[in-house]
Length: 181
Image (tube, rainbow, N blue to C red; front, side, top):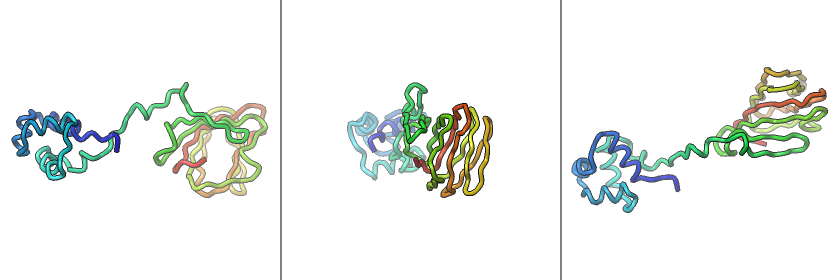
């Protein structure tokens, strides 16, 4: 709730409607001073005042209460990626974090390495795209050789593992929903 600024939203909607502060205050039957304090974050409007403002501005009342997305937090610079090493595999997180319903990462599988001894499963659905090299993926009882440019979808709870028994590292871009590592 820390990213909610009701006053800024009131001001944004007011300006979008081409109304001055005085005009909106008059239409909403509140004092210009009260509207000014609300817009500057110096006063918190009552629910009734929010309802009247919403009706006057022709927006849903709840729109004042939605949390703002800080778009800067959505950008991940290549030099700022979070990195993880699990067993012999290294991961670079392309998503900002593990919140939300989707995470995307780059998995680096060194030559002569496997993601695990046994086939593993997780609740997340996965799509992987081979960026470089070649790699074997085991899906249940089947084995597939994937090369750069190939992709695979791995449904939730399907036992699988990655194996690189080739001389070159394999680099795999993948997305998982919901995030699971």
